Image (cartoon, rainbow, N blue to C red; front, side, top):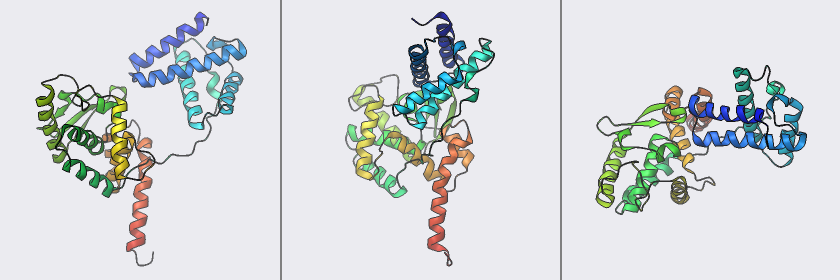
Amino acid sequence: MPDQHSIVPYQSFLEYLKFQKRFSAHTILAYSTDLQQGFDYFRSAYGVGDPAALSAAMIRSWLADGKANGLSPRSLNRKISTFKSFFKYLVRQGNLSTSPMSTITSPKTSKRLPVFIKEEEALQLLKGLQAGSDSWESLNAQTILTLLYSTGIRLSELIGLKHEQIDIGRASLKVLGKGNKERVLPISPHLQTVLQQYQQIKREKFGDAQGTVLVTDKGKPLYPKYVWNLVNKYLGGATTLDKKSPHVLRHTFATHLMNQGADLNAVKELLGHSSLAATQVYTHNTIGKLQEIHRKAHPKS
């Protein structure tokens, strides 16, 4: 059994993430898993369950063990980030005077460039969905994919979308993002039409059901696997990309905006990023497009 010293700060830290930082349940679970795995190792290898007894050498040993067992630099960095946050919390609470993480450095990772579909492929996909929206199943698919591509919202934001968050009259969509941060997104005339049609057919089929806007083709609450399968199916017919997830459509939304000259700060706000650094990953695509234009159009290229 872990001693009381390890239980109290561990649990209070997770409560702090939930109630003070307002992190999502998914993020808190990731933190909890990292902490649990770490302390399982420290107890097994060193008989230590008290954070105050941990040293930088013990933590390095755990990370080395993870690397030896095939953990990627990205996964190791997440675990380092978790423990840095945990010990920072303990120091701030007065449980510890210093953090053993101060000398722990993160391994370098190669920057993963966002995967996206070409503009012509996206337009062809939406055109095909529109043409085939005579059944509820196809209208459902059209609405879900159009929302993802036209607004760039995250999968969790899509699933949790409530009726009161959509204002057709003002052509806007209110989204509750990470950390319960609210942002307002514009809705295109095409998306307005799709949403109005969807709401009407949905009422006719399933009545005035309260709750979330989007449902499955059976009228049940939307869930992640359903959306993943749906996106994978339709992207599989529209592109040759290996990756065909809902997040690809978020990347596509951002990339196409940047390629059309959108301001980086504006894209940051639309995506709900907390820092500009997270949005800057899309600028490489813009540069690539400019290079292509330069090569085709410049007489000396």
